[in-house]
Image (cartoon, rainbow, N blue to C red):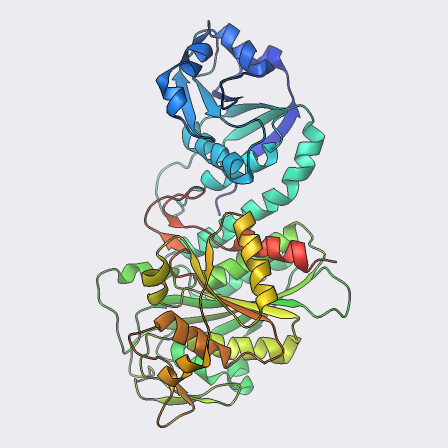
Length: 489
């Protein structure tokens, strides 16, 4: 998989500036004040930096924006990147600045003169995240990873702050890779193999194969995958970094590696995007990787249901009735509402097997959430105000948008079936809500639970602040923060 840029932190050495190759970056305060490194560069470049600062271009720049002086006189570097940044920037401004540096880097080594900038580690994280690229299937020579040197006043302290952020970046990259992979590569077998490989990080990984799922009674999950040649699986990843005997925090992800809609087949236009319908499982995997890499002091279990939804002679039909692991019967009205069938069984198994202290599921579940919230926010549904508030705080702190949506008993009438305990769709209106109401039936009353519908944020067609177009890795940072702030010993 692509790896984050090689970033190191070193003592500031102004004598090296003139001869540094590649590109150099410097930070200038919002009112144009330069630090010691800036004044040195201004002198070396015959006041080119001063001329930029007093230009209309600099005045119009917002916090975190960047301007480039190409081939500056007095420097060996090909370019001088001038970043406008407050003396005490917010986390979002610092990460934006790093992302802008990544875009300007363009395959060259970079020296960042961060000096005493208080959020140098966040700048480095923004640089790492925006530097992601997915070119696994492109031919030709691949560029070597770029080297980035942050010159700072206290490199040991900054490196210590940045270390867990590097684990976050690797977790986000892992999620993005999984979500970007085409379905002929990321089969259910391949997905499971990639998760099993994380045993080398200290995770315990168990794969439940189809005979195991039959024995457990996971009939709604199996109903989704029975039309495919790819075997359905559930993969359980456990990180035991907390106190022995403490109930784990549970993460559950929808892992539909490709979704044709089954017999209720989708239109051809845009169906190629359904390689991302395993995005929820991808986020769970990325979070588990991050927790293992940073040695989190928490007990966390991540469960993902891996299936492929295909039409065939053996596929589930609209109108079929299937009994879940819990024992409830479900009338399948639309085979394209398959994600909730996968989650229903995995949610029940997670509670039955692990008795979690709290549980969050993630799924690219409905187009209805896109209609409601667009690409700016995930839909958040919860049966517990405290857990919901904790997640919203974590998401806001990490700049990952989420918006709480309602759950209420009157919506249950929309999924009432005449021949079964429930049906899997509720019609045109409140589609994201009825999907959440369906899932809530598989959550025990005493288990704090959140459902995250990430259909609008897992994969986007244009770049975001910290990601190129494609998979975003949304949720890895927020869930890592949630666990760190609320569930670590």
